[in-house]
Length: 289
Image (tube, rainbow, N blue to C red; front, side, top):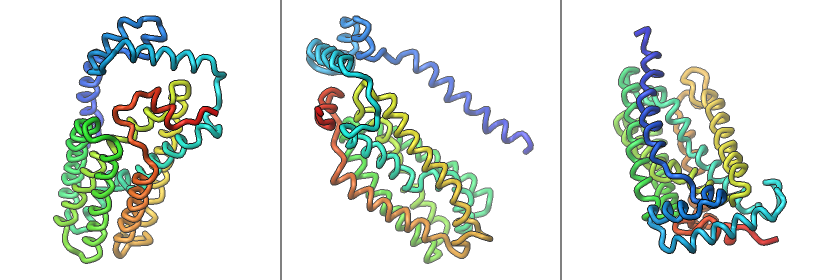
């Protein structure tokens, strides 16, 4: 009805309130506490997080902070940060060239192109979002058990299989239900892989002194490509004037190809960051000079 848009916006109050309540129980960062000379509290939080030898961990953090303070504030775009900048760029780049926002934004139209009625298309697009949420929680459960790199590999294989099969479904006119199954697999693959890993990974690879700038860089790359893909999608997808108005299968074949490139990149270039302190990771990824 005429008030549906109000419900769509108003329902977001519920998760917002849940988030606000849960934030109350989030502990302070041990690094911030060490910077404020509250080492005892930092040790307590480190112990609560299940990290062994909290005193040694606090000392490592303190040493790292002192090293950072000795250095002059440097630009993000200098040679010694080249590797981590490329890592942040490519994980954000591939995140969007999986087609995730294209599929979520245009899910009703994609499903209509496969033969579903408009109302069924809308309900099934809600189902895609639900699967995304469920598998995001599964990814959060697995990220410290399997590691970031393994989740990216699992997600990449899921991307490739699902996108190839979506392209095949359109190419052969296999039917809307077949297409829906593989779109659900696609959303699950994204949620358990890239959707879970990207922001954790970007926050881990940048040292404390430039972390805010580094995360801003990664987020900017992510949303620039999200906007670009959303902007150009109608040029290809539109059923009346689009480049692929007869059959949109090449769009999904292209995204599948991009995910093959992601898999190669993950296997060859992405370091595992699970179980490595931020200080140790900085030494591993950033040359001293």
